[in-house]
Image 1 (cartoon, each protein chain N blue to C red):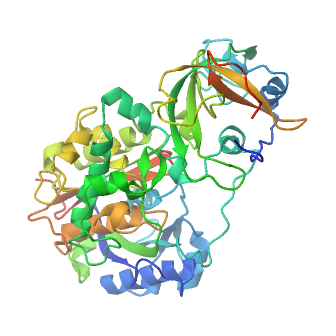
Image 2 (cartoon, rainbow over the protein chains, first blue to last red):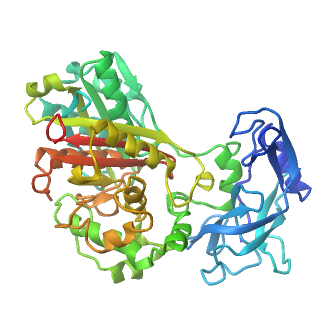
Image 3 (cartoon, each protein chain N blue to C red):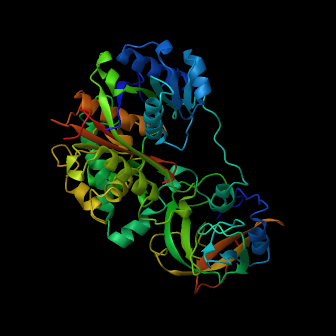
Length: 141
Length: 380
């Protein structure tokens, strides 16, 4: 897939998420007041504005909500690849890529079960990618 | 009615490929054409709104010393939102004659600032690493979800482009005018599955401008005034991954009904409609989010010819962003077509059209502005 992705630059509010990925943990936040689980990270609940929130490790389970297959790869991307939206078991949705799976409409079936697959980019950044839940782990992307 | 009217409107002299003009000059070219249309000079303008460029730059370039400015820049629907803000400013007396300008060297890139995102932004952290390369691989992301949930077919999605090409064929200024079929669309190169080339907007250069004043001055200008009957606006999210519902735009759902309620109209009152179509799914989302079609029915509604020439609800009658032109922030051109339809001067004029609804989108389902225009100052 990609050899040189535009990598994120963590902020104070998101550092815990990227620290988690580096330790192969998908860390989400949950409101201590209303129990809302949300993403992307911020130090308050987007539903009730409560500042008391807790970080927890998510299951890493998700389903494929939607995607496109970029048929015009360029720059760092070597071949057609899917940009995917996945629905985490805990509720929030996130953008990611699907690995260990052909990048075709036939192989990428909406609502298929997925699991997180951490892809080390450098010492600081590891990205949360997803693979079919039954797939054998392959080469890191 | 709002008590405000559009008293001047024009696009740039040329549309399409304009490498001999900078982006700032495209703003000025559209503005000078609109000023001439309204019989005004820059000195007559005391309110300036624009997006893409700063209002400071546009006001200075045109020699205007405004008492009111609006630099709202939330993507291609910014101009609908400028209209809404101008209504409030004119009624409050903050200014008396507002100029709204758009200019974009979308194709030639002359005098256009570099586009970049911060790697520390939420988009930089939570979307960019996964390879979206711009609107064709971002704005399109929710559609497979919509297709599965509501049974929209690839053929129905393609029919949006086919129908709009029928309208474009009636517009001499449209970039693409040759008729196309559903097969042509599905045979065109795949850009980002499920989107083919002909389901994606053009990339062109151009601009346009509007001039607004209170309705009591409507008779002071050479052109028939087009009345602003209702307005709405909203924003949802800068991240397509965080849309509340992948099959519906929250900003559409807020802006559209608000504009219709302010205008005091129901769906059957709308004679003509524009829905900003950066990609073929936008009219489908727009028709459903504003209640013109039930959930899941807009694809068939369009494929069956209801929005085509001779159909019950003429939609995107200039050919839209898919065939007319699309500089990047297309909203100004949708507004211009609504104004032409209300003046009775459109190339593909809808007979007896008295009310036009113009729905804009900004970013990738990030924002919306909706304007209802009328030939008369009151609804029927």
